[in-house]
Amino acid sequence: MKRLKKNFYRGGRLKEYRRSLHFFLKNPLTILGLAIVISLILISIFASQIAPYPEQGRGISSVKDRLLSPNYERLFGTDNLGRDILSRVIFGSRVSLKAAVVVILIVVVIGTPLGIIAGYFGGKIDEVIMRMSDMILAFPSLLLAIAIVAILGPSLMNAMIALSVPWWPWYTRLARSQTISLRERQFVEAARAVGVSNFKIMFRHILPNCLTPIIVQATLDMGYIILSLAGLGFLGLGTQPPTPDWGVMISKGRSFILNQWWFSTFPGVAIFITVLGFNLLGDGLAEALNPKRRK
Image (tube, rainbow, N blue to C red):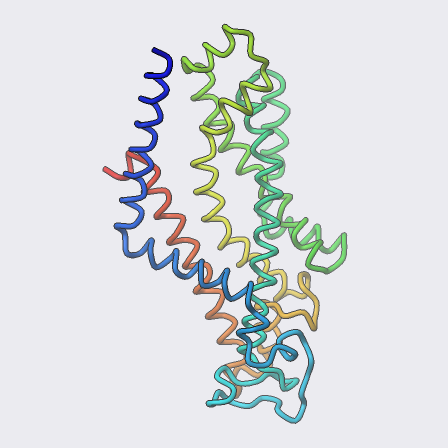
């Protein structure tokens, strides 16, 4: 009998996965977002092989070629130090993607367990955790990140730490709301009845059921984190030269925007396409994994 029940649940879960995949692949905008994200990942992995001038992409200057307009040899032109902008944009994708992944991992690892603990136990534990979250959410996230970087000093590592601080409470609130709706379900009550510990109930039974909205939210946040990192770089608080960074490139190109438009334009287009790709992918995942939105 137990084996039949297991097979029934596995069959139902597999059927639901297939239905979600069908709706995911049916949406052309979702496929476009997936293609953009996969392209970004491949470009960042193989940046050294794809970039036409990899040494300039890493920061080596060539002053004799400074401020060349886009042409057949330099598709995106060159910057004020003669570096190929296409190569800089390609290597900048590696920096942006790595930093965004690190920030997402930090906020998920911190925020999700705190949210599950707060939602499962409730009472004073819930009050303490949620009031801490509310204190952080009371400040504008970018303004708080700027203040943290100003204290720690400008660098990519400090920028990632600064963005992680105001971001984790969103995952705490999300995980808490999911846990509150799950803690009274029959499978949790059954686990308590047979003597399963609270730790195992939270992280073996409740956590897997919270992952779907967390994955969707993380996908959507990837684009916003890349945009925020570029904003900190633009202000001189993130990645420092000569490391390639889209925000720094836009900032350096401000002085040349009237005559050398390509200096800031192409890094800005790269940010736009990247954020668009993650937003389309996140919306597609939310639609495919949520039966209510499917209808």
